[in-house]
Image 1: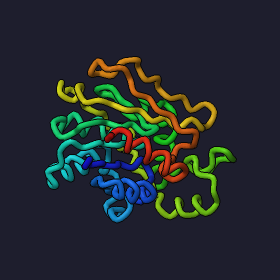
Image 2 (image 1 turned 120 degrees about the vertical axis):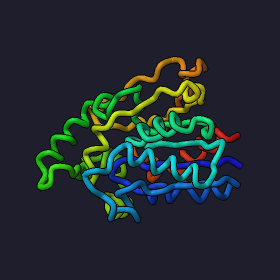
Image 3 (image 1 turned 90 degrees about the vertical axis):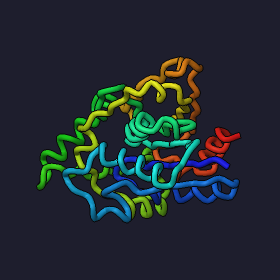
Length: 241
């Protein structure tokens, strides 16, 4: 049995994984898909002081409270920053990092350093009524849709789970200085249907642990857990094989 800990990205909550959790569990694995502070059942905690450090603490606390070990830690999008910092905090509890169409930071970087387009979101927050809320990205014409989701029923459902993101998530820096964290194997899953101009940082040929980089692809948009859950589940199960 493998323990999968699935961490959602910005604006989403733990329900984003609803199509992935059941098949992973049916295969005999333990699966956790919490909502981070400010989202889902914790939406009432949203505030200007919620940031990247808050979300790292959310995940670390869950791992320690449940005494989880050998965790396959999956971070989607913004949560690439979260899982990187979690692995640096409790490296002995993480078996593998999975960056799912995610930002992959270096020590000391912010979300803007990894993906400069995030500066636009910060500018939106500064111009908002309270100065710290970043609204979800707007729906785009097909084939990009709402976070890559184009089916009308799925788009309507996705809208029910989206909420504003605190700007501090994009401004706080990751701290990655634990040597043991560099030994954790990594897998990168890239979704290949992306809006024009959205540039992903290239994956180096070697992982920090010296092994060849492990990069997989899914021919879909950003929220592949909604648009291609069967295929994503298959990739994640392959990691545990």
